[in-house]
Amino acid sequence: MPGEWVPDPAVRVAVQTPSLLGESPMWHPVEQVLYWCDIAGRKLQRFDPVAGELVHWDFDTEVASCAPMLDGGLLLAMRDGLWRFDTATGRRQRLAAPPYDPASERFNDGKCDPQGRFWVGTIYEPRDPALASLHCYSAGGKLVRKADGITVSNGLAWSPNGRTMYWSDTKAHTVYAFDFDPAAGDMCNRRVHASFSAKVPGASLEGYGGRPDGAAVDVQGCYWVAMFEGQRLLRLSPDGGLLREVRLPVRCATMPCFGGADLKTLYVTTARENRPAHELAGQPWAGCVLALDVLVPGLPANLFG
Image 1 (tube, helix red, strand yellow):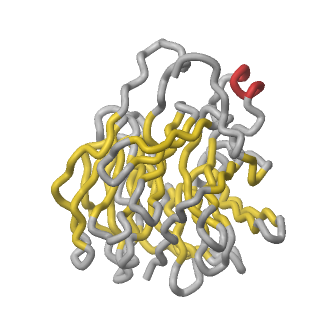
Image 2: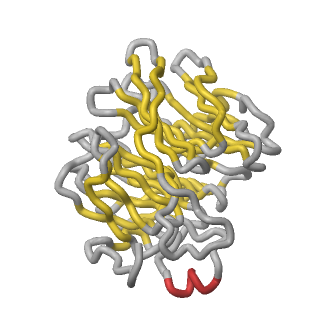
């Protein structure tokens, strides 16, 4: 990416209040509002774009991802387990204990599949060896380990027909695709959907394309992925080819999601935690939620239950 970096002028700031580590945006299909997590800030955020209202809930540990529930609550993936959270009362009820040592691992990216099962991966914080894993939690209350051998679980999404599942290892700069059995909730035939060049140790970030973080799929089956430290979003075709690059005004995008009544607003969470002062000085929107209008709508968030 040589030359001057010119952000796409269509990208705007949707929520000015910054998060330290904004992640896992989710457009609630019933409430018609945007939720997202500030992992480092230990907050769950909610924004109503019609009313212009921003509210948040504070927790005593990290909340990494969320999903809407059929009974009206939210399912939260936190360092200390999976919880049902009532936004009206602020009460939470633990659904499952963490299947790892919370001193070195925590839940990360999580989403429901079209059948209402919650899939959530982990991040192994020491980064080496690759001890992170992927789990599936069903309405019956069972948490099952589905895959492992990675370091930073991200990029969960499903194709419009529910037959292809996506999952990425951010540290490995790789997005994987799997054949998915909707009835059984099984994944097989793992293959590389897209891979990206690793960052050269000690080298400048100029020209670095980033590593795949969170993602979302549109109705045409294209995979939108945030490239952390790459200052861009990519739209990949169902076979992994690059269709579009959206240049961003911040270095660290973390995850896109489709929102709005027509699901044609692409919201993007970003991060400012641990970024150098000179970078933040030149990128005042770092940590804010960005937005971009798109022509092809996205798939709605699936409800748990």
